[in-house]
Image (cartoon, rainbow, N blue to C red; front, top):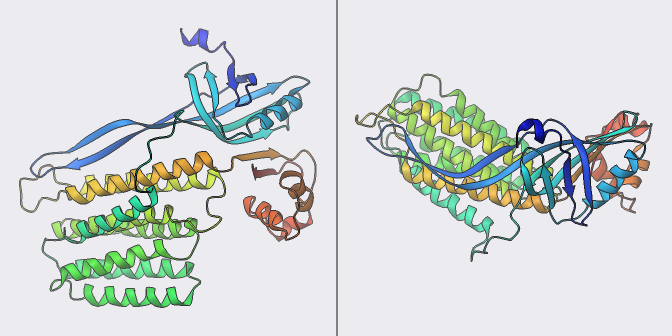
Length: 406
């Protein structure tokens, strides 16, 4: 069927309650990701990519309910997708898709039409076989393996500039991490780790293994803080961005190995932080998806950095080739983490949003979307989800986008 024929068809969504909605649609797009591992070999140019099965497809949706009953139809649709089972989407461009619609927004600001936008994540119809070890435990064990493999990979000559760079990295990491600590004992432990790392780094040429071990420990610590996953990931991302500043002018093999060591520690720590949330971190699908995007982007950037540092071939003793074992383990921990987060996203609360058609206030809107409770927990959740400030206490104006989760 040609695109001319396809574009004439409507988007059909069969919801879990077996109701069928045929709607007008626009802007068809999709994103595809595969399970893949990267391998680099000594004396072999470039790297080997072991591409496996599709990890999943994402489908941003944009469709419309039109006509005098558009508000009622949109309301019925909202009710129909308040179900944890997947929908069946018959897409004019992408054929039949079994997917969870994990976020959705309703725009009623135009007369005679409700614009609906959202995100659909493709899913399989059966659960994967359960392993004897939980995904969280698998990530934590893989983190230990990565640290052990990484610290042993520094075998090149060390110079004074490497010591200065490591001290700068540790100081920047400490200054970022200390900001999210609220427990005095954690602050003291972090300070002790910083002092230990500084002491060993200053004698790096004599004790390279101890210096790397202390540095990895320092860079990893924010992933274990008693802080929200979002704050821990943000702190580690800041450290990663600081690391990338040191890429400029890296020519020596030892300097490149040090960058690899630090990068492995930070990226794997982001994975560890992601799978060890505290209560309330993953209250909805969007929060998990945001972490997925952050880790994926950082990991892709890190691989690009290593590729830029790698020699055209590994024939020279001074040629840099990323360590096979550590990089293979890093690929595994990222894959495990993202798979775990996708499962959280599919099972979490789904995002909804509306554009206010009249002025309102926090109390009325909380009652409308969550209901009121005696401890005002729902009010606080509503405030947090919409990033409201003290100014909004006086009223929320017409045209404001309001987000809520069901």
